[in-house]
Length: 408
Ligand code: SAM
Ligand code: TMP
Ligand code: ZN
Image 1 (cartoon, rainbow, N blue to C red):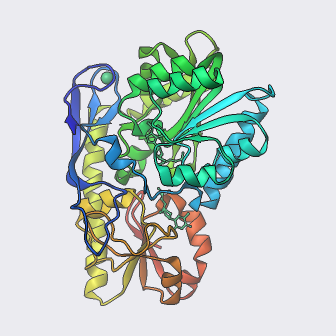
Image 2 (spheres, protein in one colour; image 1 turned 30 degrees about the vertical axis):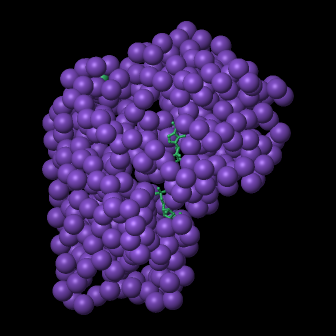
């Protein structure tokens, strides 16, 4: 574990604005039969006074988080399947028109994006350190390398396959503390006019919606257009386009090119202006965010305590990594939420990290609806509420907590 009081990117001084205390690894679901002791770390976030990048203060060793049995399978959501099919088609129709074009995706998981590229017959490679999901992608015929993307991996890929027109990463680049090595890898692998495209949760959406549960061990950086522009410049690249995405509670897709290779589009300046006007990374905004987090915690606990006092049954839906921060910071365990329903077989039968709420199947949920269900997977609200419309028809009510606590 390494702790720092300096910006991991520019070396500037950092200002801590929230401390969640001791937290477990958000994807380390516990075997109820016992086994290895749970690993805890200090989860605190800070902002660089110089380049404005928001970042964690402690860096959990990557092998602890991204293991063989990493339980997150991207294809579990049909909305995300559609999102990544559209992403792949967009690349195929723009950057990958040449029949010999080559795309590398790091954090390719179970192949949710590359599947479409593979079916179109384009040269591709996924780079994925977690063996289980990497094998799931390989079983679909996708080319995958079971490794962490970093300078050495990228140099080897460049030597074996030649330059890439597109290097892509979704919900992965912000997980990587060692961005210096990643940028050197991009430099080794990217074609002269190629693009490095990544999409990650947007700090402005996190602040505006008080979605503090986006903060957990795997999410190391919280990007804004301003901080990504500074980071790209620091490593000799240039931010040339940005696009706001609705998925995962609000993300930005950043397009980075070699410095001077492409003309930046108008969206970059527009977002920089918006961020300035919203004062997203000013100290007073972050202080208001911190106060709002505690308000959500107090309101959610009050609703759950009231349900308990009334003898109502309460479950949750979606054993998300995010819910590790929510439950452990708010002190929510099986005494307030009796179980959490989740469609991921690798999570079912296990206990949520730290808070030890049993994970059960959605079929169990449907067999005997609770009175209330806390929507832990709030970022998939539309998909889940549509799929589970029988719950409300049967008189059940959802408890949501983003952007504020509400029973709906
Ligand atoms: N791209 C998928 C998506 O958006 O659904 C998966 C996102 S998942 C939250 C993050 C993925 O990044 C995991 O599969 C993890 O193994 C992978 N990962 C973490 N560090 C990595 C690295 N240095 N190189 C490649 N993949 C990495
Ligand atoms: P995520 O917020 O990190 O994408 O995690 C979503 C979790 O919710 C994941 O464990 C899968 C689960 N899930 C369901 O159980 N049913 C669903 O319909 C969806 C979309 C997700
Ligand atoms: Zn900095």
